[in-house]
Every structure is written in structure tokens, then in C-alpha cells.
Amino acid sequence: MAHQTASASASPLPPPPQVARSLPMEINWKDLDFARYTVIGSTLLLGVRTLVYPLALAKTRLQVQRSHPAPTAPGATPPVVYRNVFHVWSGIARAEGLRGLYRGFMTTVVGITPAQAIYLTSYEYVKSHAQRFERPEWSQDKKTLHQNLIAGFLSSVCSQVIIVPIDVIVQRQMVQGTQSAAGTAVEAARGGYAEFRHILATQGVRGLYRGLHLSLMLYPPSSAIWWATYGATKQGLHDLKDAWFGSDSADANDIGRHAQGFAIQTVAGLFAGFTSGCITTPLDVIKTRYQLASRGNGAAPTVAGTIRTLLQEDGMAGFTKGMTARVMHMAIPSVLMISVYELTKRLSVVDAAVQ
Image (cartoon, rainbow, N blue to C red; front, side, top):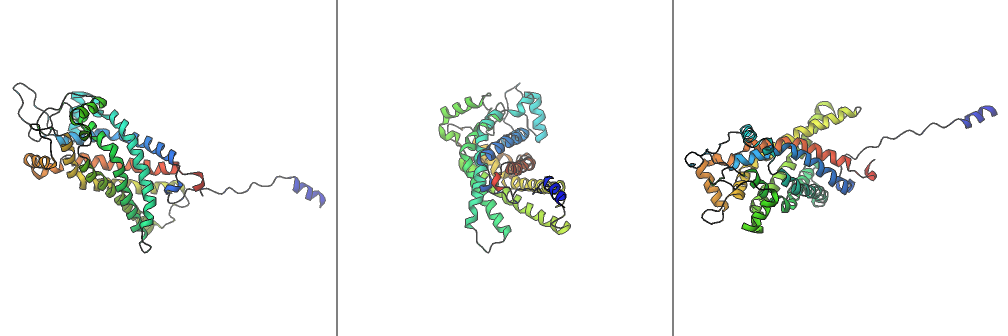
């Protein structure tokens, strides 16, 4: 008996069972490492913008072109009237080379990267603090909708101070060498800094913020619509999945659970981008043409004049110019961006929040 006791005491004890640690179901502001979240999110979103930038360029050229260009001088080559996104791309590739598809991109990199950091951090911050304004009797779906609407709207407002000047400069670079909406040729190509100095010299700081009021009417509501639609669609698809397959259909299989989550995010992101793109295209057309309008007889362009010119040239159809490009520019990146957003949150969780 003594021998058995000694042997038992000499043998190593089995290791304690490893408890699987998992991320919280809902990752909130307090769960995030601010610096990591900002750096990872901005870097990954820059990669997404690199992929979809040619769509933004095509949208801009489609929106500012005249359906019936002004007559050109005898012997001069008439301006091209683009039919669709692919016609824009092929025309640019032939005339300007593939680099033409990324005209103005470096300006975007310099300006939009900090704007994205502001947008991401303010979205999470506002979303977490919006909860204090909720009523106890609200359903969880209503609370989620409330958080997404407010956070999406205010985060976009915060980022406009950087986005609007960059938007003005980049849009001018995108259409350099083409015929403007006013029928005049846009100046020869300039770099981003040269364009910045030119606008300051000719129009002052107000020129950099031309269309700020339109941007505030466009982007914050668009952001609110996107996040609200995404949140509602995502929740609805989760409920539908649970009703069809049961809430524990993939609990025993991490791969299956992540695959289901990715599929739901993809569909919700596509639908959110499609919905937001369709609703906000008319205002985007007005904003783009107003920001790029040249002075007629020395008079500064006005929103009313921009709308009047658009109606005279294209009728009501003018307000849907570039809609396909805009919807593609919002729907396709939405899938990539929401995947980046969800991944960034998971990679940025502080250790204390891991259960």
C-alpha cells in the first residue's frame, strides 16, 4: 500500500483542462484597443478603396458629362459621351493608359486615410453612447436600429471636415482633360497639391469646401441608411436562419458558424449598399456637378442653377446619371468593407474582454 502511495505521488498530475476563450457576442467601444482598431481599420479600408477606386472615377465622369456636348471647333475631336461604366474604363485605358483609372488616387490616400480613422472611431464611440437615450420598453431590434442610425449619421458628419476638401480636389483630378458639365474643357492635369494651391489662390478656403452643405445633406443620411439597413437585414437573416435551421445549427462547427456569419454579412452588405446607393444618387449628381461647375460670366455657381441646367439638358433622367456606377460603387465595396469592419473589431479586442 505504501509503495502504491509513493508511486502515485511521484507521477505527474494531469494538466488542467483548457477552457476555450471566446470573443464577446457584441463587441462594443469598451472592448476595443483604440490604437489597434484605428490602425488596422484604416489600413484594411485603404486596400478596399484601392480596389474600387476605378468605380468612383467612372461614376464621376458619367455624372458630369453632357448628354449633348457643346459644338467643338472645326477639325477638333468631339468629346466622348460615355454609355456605361465599362465604356468609361475602356475609353480611359485607350486614351490615358491604365494609370488613368487611378487619376487622383494618391490625393485620396493622403486625405481619406485620416478621415476613415475618424469615421470608424466616432461610429463605435457614438454607437456605444447612444444606448443611454434608449427606452427600456424598446425591443432589441429597435435599439439596434436606433444605435445604427445615430452612429452612422454622426460619424459621417465628423469626417466631412476632411472628406469635402479631398472630394473637391480628387473630383477635379478625375475629370481633368474632359468636357465639364458647363460645356467648357477642364484645365490640364495637375497633381493633388497643385490643385489644392490653385483652388486656394482662385477661390480661397470656401472653394475647398464648396458643396459642404450638399455633402452634409448626402453623406450622413446615406451613412445612416446604410448602417440601419445593414443592421436590420443582418438581424432579419439571423432570425430567418434560426427559424429554418435552429439557433444551434452550427455551434458544434466553428467553420460552419463563421461561414454562416460571412454569408449573412455579405447579403446584408450588398442590400445596404444597393438601397443607400439608389436613394441618394440624385443628390450625389447635384453635389458632384455643383462642386465641379465653373464660373459662368464671373458668377459663382449655385445649387439652384446646377439643378436648372441639369433639367434643361437631361430632364428628370439627369438625376439618375451614373446610378449603376454609384450602386456598384456602394454595393460591391460594402461586402468588402463590412468584412474588414467585422475583422478589425475582432482583431482589436482587448485581452480583458476575451471570455
